[in-house]
Length: 209
Image 1: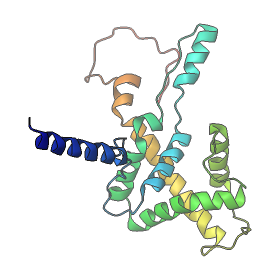
Image 2: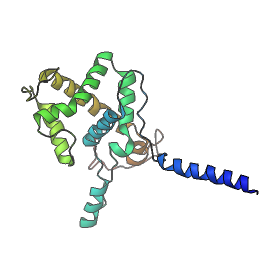
Image 3: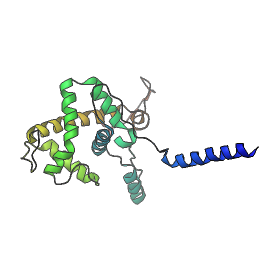
Image 4: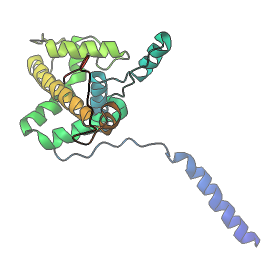
Protein backbone atom coordinates (compact mmCIF):
# COMPACT_ATOMS: atom_id res chain seq x y z
CA UNK A 1 0.00 0.00 0.00
CA UNK A 2 1.43 3.36 -0.94
CA UNK A 3 1.60 6.31 1.41
CA UNK A 4 -1.24 8.22 -0.30
CA UNK A 5 -3.71 5.33 0.02
CA UNK A 6 -2.76 4.74 3.66
CA UNK A 7 -3.37 8.41 4.53
CA UNK A 8 -6.71 8.37 2.69
CA UNK A 9 -7.94 5.30 4.60
CA UNK A 10 -6.73 6.74 7.91
CA UNK A 11 -8.70 9.94 7.26
CA UNK A 12 -11.87 7.98 6.45
CA UNK A 13 -11.45 5.88 9.60
CA UNK A 14 -11.00 8.98 11.77
CA UNK A 15 -14.11 10.55 10.28
CA UNK A 16 -16.13 7.40 10.98
CA UNK A 17 -14.98 7.24 14.60
CA UNK A 18 -15.93 10.90 15.10
CA UNK A 19 -19.44 10.26 13.71
CA UNK A 20 -20.05 7.04 15.66
CA UNK A 21 -20.95 8.57 19.09
CA UNK A 22 -23.87 10.48 17.55
CA UNK A 23 -25.52 7.21 16.46
CA UNK A 24 -28.26 5.78 18.67
CA UNK A 25 -28.26 2.00 18.56
CA UNK A 26 -30.72 1.61 21.45
CA UNK A 27 -34.31 0.41 21.06
CA UNK A 28 -36.53 3.10 19.58
CA UNK A 29 -39.94 3.80 21.03
CA UNK A 30 -42.40 3.76 18.18
CA UNK A 31 -46.09 4.54 18.58
CA UNK A 32 -48.63 1.99 17.41
CA UNK A 33 -49.91 3.05 13.98
CA UNK A 34 -53.62 3.90 14.10
CA UNK A 35 -56.14 5.05 11.51
CA UNK A 36 -58.51 7.14 13.63
CA UNK A 37 -56.85 7.92 16.96
CA UNK A 38 -54.05 10.47 17.19
CA UNK A 39 -52.02 9.38 20.22
CA UNK A 40 -48.29 9.95 20.57
CA UNK A 41 -45.85 7.60 22.29
CA UNK A 42 -46.24 9.28 25.69
CA UNK A 43 -50.02 8.87 25.68
CA UNK A 44 -49.70 5.26 24.59
CA UNK A 45 -47.25 4.70 27.45
CA UNK A 46 -49.79 6.24 29.82
CA UNK A 47 -52.47 3.88 28.49
CA UNK A 48 -50.10 0.95 29.10
CA UNK A 49 -49.70 2.09 32.73
CA UNK A 50 -53.47 2.31 33.22
CA UNK A 51 -53.91 -1.19 31.80
CA UNK A 52 -51.08 -2.48 34.02
CA UNK A 53 -52.83 -0.95 37.04
CA UNK A 54 -56.08 -2.70 36.12
CA UNK A 55 -54.37 -6.03 35.45
CA UNK A 56 -51.01 -6.20 37.27
CA UNK A 57 -48.64 -9.14 37.25
CA UNK A 58 -48.36 -11.19 40.43
CA UNK A 59 -45.42 -13.29 39.30
CA UNK A 60 -42.95 -12.00 41.86
CA UNK A 61 -45.52 -11.99 44.66
CA UNK A 62 -46.49 -15.63 44.11
CA UNK A 63 -42.83 -16.68 44.25
CA UNK A 64 -42.51 -15.08 47.68
CA UNK A 65 -45.77 -16.65 48.88
CA UNK A 66 -44.90 -20.15 47.67
CA UNK A 67 -41.48 -20.02 49.36
CA UNK A 68 -43.01 -19.05 52.70
CA UNK A 69 -45.85 -21.57 52.97
CA UNK A 70 -44.52 -24.30 50.62
CA UNK A 71 -47.68 -24.09 48.48
CA UNK A 72 -47.51 -23.76 44.69
CA UNK A 73 -47.77 -20.14 43.58
CA UNK A 74 -50.35 -18.86 41.12
CA UNK A 75 -48.11 -17.04 38.68
CA UNK A 76 -50.02 -14.84 36.32
CA UNK A 77 -48.67 -12.43 33.75
CA UNK A 78 -50.17 -8.98 33.67
CA UNK A 79 -51.05 -6.41 31.07
CA UNK A 80 -47.50 -5.10 30.85
CA UNK A 81 -45.96 -8.47 29.96
CA UNK A 82 -48.70 -9.19 27.41
CA UNK A 83 -48.60 -5.71 25.81
CA UNK A 84 -52.36 -5.46 26.15
CA UNK A 85 -52.33 -1.72 25.48
CA UNK A 86 -51.72 -2.58 21.81
CA UNK A 87 -54.88 -4.71 21.75
CA UNK A 88 -56.82 -1.88 23.42
CA UNK A 89 -55.62 0.66 20.87
CA UNK A 90 -56.55 -1.53 17.91
CA UNK A 91 -59.98 -2.34 19.33
CA UNK A 92 -60.75 1.30 20.10
CA UNK A 93 -59.44 2.41 16.71
CA UNK A 94 -61.41 -0.20 14.75
CA UNK A 95 -64.43 -1.34 16.73
CA UNK A 96 -66.17 1.51 18.55
CA UNK A 97 -68.15 4.56 17.47
CA UNK A 98 -66.50 7.89 16.68
CA UNK A 99 -68.12 9.49 19.72
CA UNK A 100 -66.66 6.85 22.05
CA UNK A 101 -63.27 7.15 20.33
CA UNK A 102 -63.30 10.88 21.05
CA UNK A 103 -64.27 10.31 24.69
CA UNK A 104 -61.49 7.71 25.01
CA UNK A 105 -58.92 10.08 23.53
CA UNK A 106 -60.10 13.03 25.63
CA UNK A 107 -60.14 10.99 28.83
CA UNK A 108 -56.63 9.66 28.21
CA UNK A 109 -55.28 13.16 27.58
CA UNK A 110 -57.05 14.65 30.60
CA UNK A 111 -56.13 11.92 33.08
CA UNK A 112 -52.82 13.38 34.26
CA UNK A 113 -53.88 17.06 34.59
CA UNK A 114 -57.16 16.05 36.26
CA UNK A 115 -55.49 13.84 38.88
CA UNK A 116 -52.86 16.52 39.46
CA UNK A 117 -55.61 19.07 40.14
CA UNK A 118 -57.79 16.85 42.36
CA UNK A 119 -55.34 14.37 43.95
CA UNK A 120 -52.35 16.69 44.50
CA UNK A 121 -50.06 14.28 42.64
CA UNK A 122 -50.73 13.10 39.08
CA UNK A 123 -51.29 9.56 37.91
CA UNK A 124 -49.27 7.36 37.70
CA UNK A 125 -47.44 7.07 40.99
CA UNK A 126 -44.71 4.67 41.98
CA UNK A 127 -46.78 2.31 44.10
CA UNK A 128 -49.36 0.01 42.50
CA UNK A 129 -51.73 0.42 45.48
CA UNK A 130 -51.76 4.20 45.05
CA UNK A 131 -52.53 3.91 41.35
CA UNK A 132 -55.36 1.45 42.04
CA UNK A 133 -56.81 3.82 44.65
CA UNK A 134 -56.78 6.74 42.20
CA UNK A 135 -58.52 4.81 39.42
CA UNK A 136 -61.11 3.45 41.88
CA UNK A 137 -61.88 6.94 43.19
CA UNK A 138 -62.16 8.30 39.66
CA UNK A 139 -64.69 5.63 38.70
CA UNK A 140 -66.72 6.24 41.89
CA UNK A 141 -66.75 10.04 41.72
CA UNK A 142 -70.23 11.43 41.12
CA UNK A 143 -69.11 14.98 40.49
CA UNK A 144 -65.85 16.81 40.10
CA UNK A 145 -65.22 19.81 42.36
CA UNK A 146 -63.86 22.96 40.80
CA UNK A 147 -60.17 22.69 40.08
CA UNK A 148 -57.65 25.04 41.63
CA UNK A 149 -56.41 25.97 38.18
CA UNK A 150 -58.75 27.13 35.45
CA UNK A 151 -59.15 24.77 32.49
CA UNK A 152 -60.72 25.05 29.05
CA UNK A 153 -62.93 22.02 29.73
CA UNK A 154 -65.07 21.97 32.88
CA UNK A 155 -64.10 19.42 35.59
CA UNK A 156 -67.47 17.68 35.15
CA UNK A 157 -66.84 17.14 31.43
CA UNK A 158 -63.28 16.02 32.13
CA UNK A 159 -64.52 13.49 34.67
CA UNK A 160 -67.15 12.19 32.24
CA UNK A 161 -64.51 11.60 29.54
CA UNK A 162 -62.07 10.05 32.02
CA UNK A 163 -64.70 7.63 33.32
CA UNK A 164 -65.61 6.69 29.74
CA UNK A 165 -61.92 6.14 28.98
CA UNK A 166 -61.42 3.98 32.09
CA UNK A 167 -64.53 1.92 31.36
CA UNK A 168 -63.41 1.20 27.78
CA UNK A 169 -59.85 0.45 28.89
CA UNK A 170 -61.02 -1.95 31.62
CA UNK A 171 -63.34 -3.79 29.20
CA UNK A 172 -60.68 -4.31 26.55
CA UNK A 173 -57.96 -5.13 29.09
CA UNK A 174 -60.01 -8.05 30.37
CA UNK A 175 -61.04 -9.08 26.85
CA UNK A 176 -57.45 -8.93 25.61
CA UNK A 177 -56.25 -11.04 28.53
CA UNK A 178 -58.96 -13.67 28.05
CA UNK A 179 -58.18 -13.87 24.31
CA UNK A 180 -54.38 -13.91 24.69
CA UNK A 181 -52.25 -16.88 23.68
CA UNK A 182 -50.90 -16.97 27.24
CA UNK A 183 -54.37 -17.38 28.74
CA UNK A 184 -55.46 -19.93 26.13
CA UNK A 185 -52.36 -22.10 26.40
CA UNK A 186 -51.20 -21.77 30.00
CA UNK A 187 -54.11 -20.69 32.21
CA UNK A 188 -56.92 -22.59 30.48
CA UNK A 189 -55.31 -24.84 27.83
CA UNK A 190 -57.51 -25.45 24.81
CA UNK A 191 -58.98 -28.96 24.50
CA UNK A 192 -60.64 -30.42 21.45
CA UNK A 193 -64.39 -30.87 21.76
CA UNK A 194 -65.76 -33.12 23.18
CA UNK A 195 -62.51 -33.89 25.01
CA UNK A 196 -61.39 -37.13 26.63
CA UNK A 197 -64.08 -39.43 28.07
CA UNK A 198 -64.22 -39.44 31.86
CA UNK A 199 -66.66 -41.89 33.39
CA UNK A 200 -66.64 -40.34 36.86
CA UNK A 201 -65.88 -36.73 37.66
CA UNK A 202 -66.05 -35.07 41.06
CA UNK A 203 -67.84 -31.73 41.00
CA UNK A 204 -66.65 -30.76 44.47
CA UNK A 205 -65.06 -27.36 44.32
CA UNK A 206 -66.15 -26.86 40.71
CA UNK A 207 -66.21 -23.20 39.69
CA UNK A 208 -68.81 -22.14 37.14
CA UNK A 209 -67.60 -19.25 34.99
